[in-house]
Image (cartoon, rainbow, N blue to C red; front, side):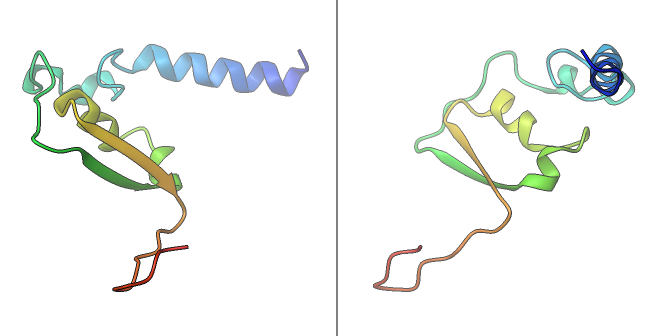
Length: 90
């Protein structure tokens, strides 16, 4: 590996050691005690729209949703288009 790649690997590895393995938050702000033991079922699927920049944050809340709700799906994009009545989004 090149020196820059080793440096990046070391930063990721160091970060993961500081984070809780279940909720992926810093150990000082771990929320595992407040989360249910098993994800809850919902009647339908919960769609979560997440901006790609929020996905990169250590304190992102969307990963917690997968620990709380069994029927959840995450879509990550920079922007989302809303379909107008009678027209498909795209």
